[in-house]
Image (tube, rainbow, N blue to C red; front, side, top):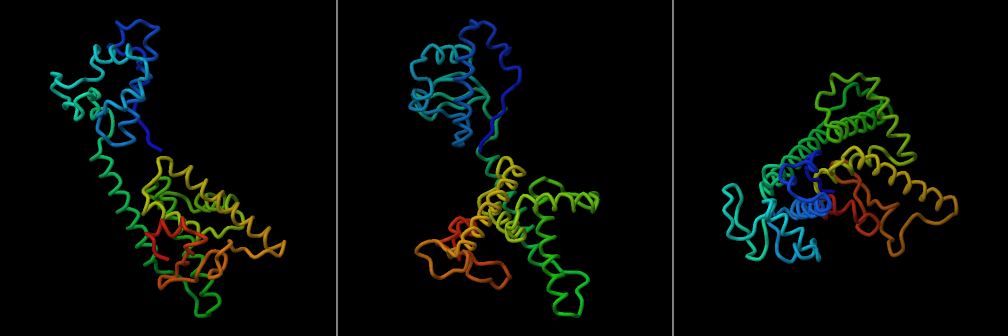
Length: 276
């Protein structure tokens, strides 16, 4: 989802003082739609003629008002802060880069997110477990708990932008993780955290990472409950046409991560760059 910045006091903008009140709302609506389209497609305020016609429809008066009040510019304008429209019949939004993110800024943010998530993933892979006992069984349990705990810490840092986890009490961390486990139900929280980090690395951070993470856990719970229902009914938990996997997984790779089946879990395969 893409967001735009709109002044809360836009209805009282000085440029709208001379606009009749009954025409202000359509004019504001036109401007918001144009800004939203430009942010969505990263055109830095450039609006092609076809888009202007599609958005404005028959509201030519709104376009005229926007031009007259210098909210948008046609080709040949004399505004020193705005570029000329790339489309000779199109327009450019006035001072777009002053209030909205440009294409270069969005690309830089996405690159920074990829680097940050990659760093988190590398730290997760190289995490060293403390307090592993000599007993093989206990060591396996300790390793599993440590891996899950480390993944959840990374999710918490990335999703909620909590960079200083040392200042967060252990009790608060446990309560947060307990809430996530309750939402995830019978789904494997470590596997879901691992897949979520992969998703953020490959597809970029969503606009609402906290809400998206909780939605991810709810979807994981629904899938797990569906598998349990099929198992109770004696129906194999495999999708039609797939005889190679077990519940959507093909074992583990060298790093110990579960390998997704391209038939049953194409979304996970896509998040991990197409390799199964």
